[in-house]
Length: 394
Ligand code: AMP
Ligand code: MG
Image (cartoon, rainbow, N blue to C red; front, side, top):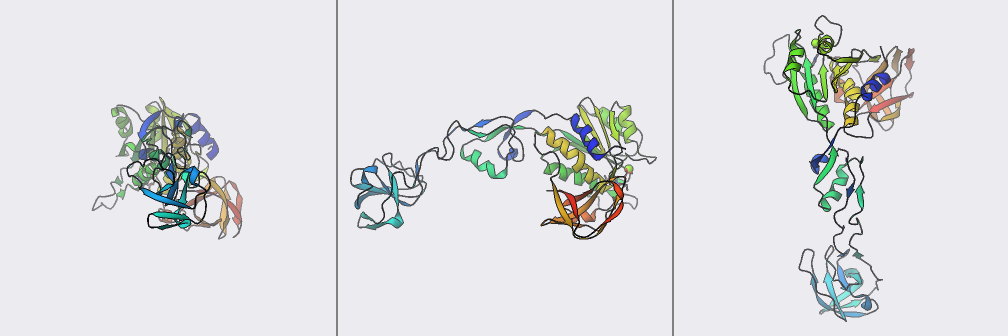
């Protein structure tokens, strides 16, 4: 049995960052830029008023009284140049007349009978946002390797950048296995059948990682069913995620079938709980990840092995779940020869180990927002308040 770290290393050693391709702006959120982006425009696009007020010429900054020559509204017709002794009413965001030197805020003047009296003087450039003040045309707005966040999208939108070169997601196929496994929406399940919860977990986990599955299928525990499915595929995806059938049961054919189909084993069995039967192999550039069938093990192994591989392919900087120190809210029995990944609820620097850690148990996931990672050790009881390491889930 190898360690979790070694298993991750073996998987990631074979994963390269994938190709870049052009994608729509909103479809690119959560993806990494595959090239530098230079601004095609100035932002603001034109010199604009920062206030509702009166645009005045620089020569008029010392004047006490001015005539109101007209009104300028955002989106309205371009205003003519200001004449001597005149000002123009202007609203926030409007194009300032080309010879304006400042905008006097409405609060600083008294407007009466077509004239303003200035109560507080302004300096040159006051309340005018110069063109390119925010972003200069031609400047680097985002470099290759930057993650496109939801909060950054508006910048690209404002500049009219609607398509971006980003690292594309890998193609990922999902194969669940088990003759007992049925679709989740079957109305009346026969007693010996179960619903394919792993498939819906994996679809959701992939979706959260920004990946749409290339295919998803459940295969019967029958020799030849996996090999037959693979043979029929026109093209293997970059990653095939399997669940179940990787343990030591009489119907666990996955490893053998993959290897008979030419898959080279990277490892089988990792010193971890849950998730010990985890399998990984490669063939012709396709990574095969055989997650255990037990739901908690499948989900844990997705986060530990599949997600980092996807993240690396997509050029993301952080491959692994972010780790934090946390103080236990309860005592906890730990230790053993395997790394434990216990489901926990993390809040304000404290972590509650959730009840029901069996690898078949799904309900704890309703509150899980982290894994408590406990390295192998002699059996011990961790006390309430003791510091542990947690891996945060989104
Ligand atoms: P296996 O590793 O195939 O022996 O599966 C271990 C346990 O996980 C068994 O109780 C299976 O019924 C269950 N299991 C396997 N695949 C799935 C699945 N796709 N969804 C839910 N449970 C599953
Ligand atoms: Mg099975």
